[in-house]
Amino acid sequence: MTKAAGVGAPACDEAAAADTPAWGGYVVEAQAGFLLRRAHQRHAALFQEMMGARDLTPTQFTALIKIVTCGAVTQNRLGRLAAMDPATIQGVVRRLVARGLVTRAFDPADRRTHVLRATPAGLEVARQAVACATEITAATLAPLSPAERPLFLALLKKLI
Amino acid sequence: MTKAAGVGAPACDEAAAADTPAWGGYVVEAQAGFLLRRAHQRHAALFQEMMGARDLTPTQFTALIKIVTCGAVTQNRLGRLAAMDPATIQGVVRRLVARGLVTRAFDPADRRTHVLRATPAGLEVARQAVACATEITAATLAPLSPAERPLFLALLKKLI
DNA sequence: GGTCGATTATTTGTATACAAACGATACCTG
DNA sequence: CAGGTATCGTTTGTATACAAATAATCGACC
Image (cartoon, rainbow over all chains, first blue to last red; front, side, top):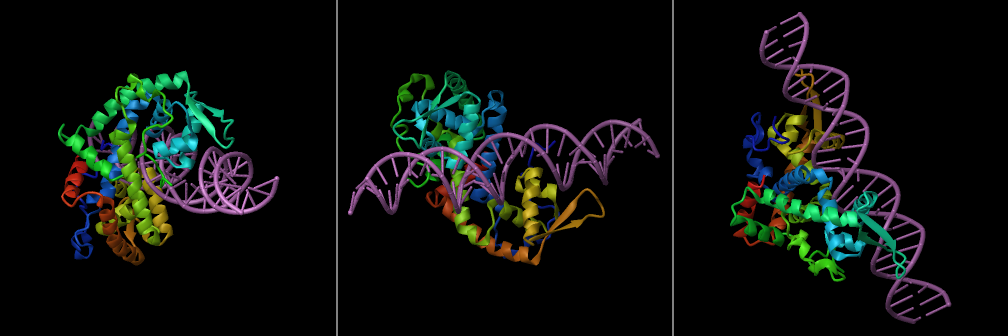
């Protein structure tokens, strides 16, 4: 019934220690970290719901878009562009390659690296996914007024 | 050189397809989902750096605080309070119990559930961690001006 | 040319995060 | 009381996310 998390519920109905002054007004649900985690969770849920048909996760989508727009990138460079750990990007790229959306080629100039490129199928998926992702961004920001949205994004950018 | 992710760098220096009009001005780094993921990553890094001495993750801290302030909760209820899946909260609680911060007791009134309570050690860890967490929140919001911080938190709350 | 530090990609281990399925139990309704 | 429904906790499987260690290679410097 409740979708996933009833955090909106009253803090603690069975609470006894809620009035303890020792916590000095610290409310974990009001902290930036908690709210960021919840907002990220909500976005991920919206993404899965709206992008689910294409079977792309947020990270896979981001990586694919960066590969497409860059034309050719190495794996580590892609990780830096997409803000993913080398160990993380390895799995993301492996799954994109397994689905035939991306190819890996040896780089004769640097035998350590593998150059990543989008396949025609990957390009087509990316093209469709961008349209979908635009709607996902709109859905994510829907609770804000049109005036609040750029303001929120500007503040969020400062935190990175 | 670049710390971990050069997202601030010019979009794509080797880019060829960057000027393709097909993408209609879609820039993945400017999307709400990407920024939320990055901001959450930054907070997690700050949390680990500043709370590392106590060896508490953000989720473990949140769960412990909810157990302490509620006095006694079941696992599923804790999950709803802390916005965690039943499968997720299971692992979080297991680790807190293994460290002796939390105990599980049978509930004679409902044999499906286990009642969670903080141990004295858990209470003490929570007390110290709250002070640390207050600093973590400050560090997370440090890039914003004092006037921007409550505004940002208010907007973030609307997104949940 | 040889050595050393840096970079690339991988692997291992741990911790979220969630879908899906499961057994056990509670509750509700006829 | 019986039967259906809902809830609780667990397990399995997949996907991030990152620390730490590793092998291969590159580049720079002597």
